Image (cartoon, rainbow, N blue to C red):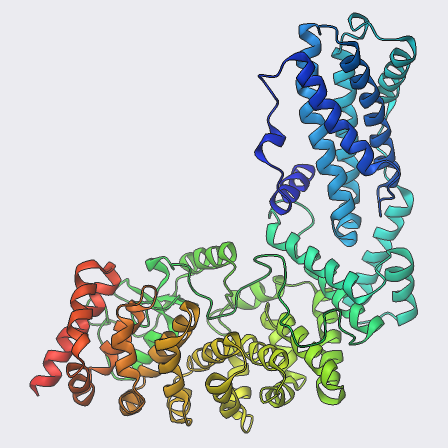
Length: 630
């Protein structure tokens, strides 16, 4: 299973053409031999004499076998004799075998060094598997019928004997390094931070990870393995996260805050796709309707069942009950009791769906006793301790480093805060928020973008919302980025941060009253990118759930922007939901009624929208008629 995962992982990352895995069926004997000779020759020229970081002996042994096969193919090609049918079948199988060899050799030369250490046993096993395939192929090959010269036949016979006797070989030097690295993980797990001399000896002198660029490559390759990782294959994602955390700490401990990018004029973009998670507002994936709360229409984070059997997000249904309602919002039936029960089955499905689509999902902090167990299992102790140590280094640079060092620290803080409530919790507890707030007003576009995105990632953890709101001037600085940010991504992530913060009911009015906040959201909804519109409309929707914000929605031009958004694919339903909230108040219904495009937009959604969108229009229309009638 593990060795199969190696090949599937590499194919996902560096996919050869489909033809690479299909044996040629229509080639003549000569063309088949020519094709095989080219493939074998390319392997020999690419890997003969190349020193692999690990599995050196296994790699050299495999390449030497391919060299003998290449000699055999060249002889048969030059000889021009017709091949026996058994030999033709062997050649077609050889075609596939050579490509499997290429996959494994590429894998060992291009993968993360730490990953190769971690996979030491299974990769060694796969080298042995290929050797066994070569042995079987040579046993079947009718050598005596090929008319080989004495020297070629001797080489083939010797290769056959060696392949039969070969056993699994695990390099002792590689294994010692693997065990040493696990010992390092154990030190972190025990709360003992290794000294820089030991770290330098392991990472630089032994592993050859000798500069910032190498460390960044290692981290990105390991993160890619986490994304591509098959859950039933060792090592676990927990162990991989530990490797990433230790590598990230060592990068800063050994090389400080020099950057491997060109001076900070350009924006850093990772070359790999889908690493870790998307930010909270990156929600273009259609969420299954059963995973959405009927009240908020958002993805449920803590689904609970009420006495009528309907499921809602805990925070939404409790707010509904606190407002004095005693009926089920969906069915209108009287609630026999007001104690919602956790819907654990649905929550598990939501967790699995979020993991499959790279969407952040934090377990509720106080819903029931299983939450703490889930959180404890979500990260290894070594990863937690290593990330804590890294956070300390980053915050020290945010506080006292040069402007360049602060920019690097903000970027790394952004990445560190991407996953896990543990990371987000201790980053904020260690005092990162005041320093990130200062960088929000930076004239450096990269520093500003990374600081506001780090703030967004931190805000996903509920306890950090109050830390951000209570930090003097922080909310205003986030709004300033939304209004005047240097980059589109900075402005979009500022809107997503407001959306995240507005999940707390008491903060909705405070955000709406911040000078220019709603106006800027309305502007982003009107003129932003598709993602920007999504960020803006979700924030406006959340703010609209507070009854006291209706006037601000009218004054800011948000209603006009929402009506226009009814024609935008991807945000129309959220816009309709926000309008439905606004028209609950007479002044809001009057304002919406005066919008010329409102009726046309609503009718269009009634005809062509999704069932969820149509429900929102019915609610909107009925609320509007009732309010105007008064």
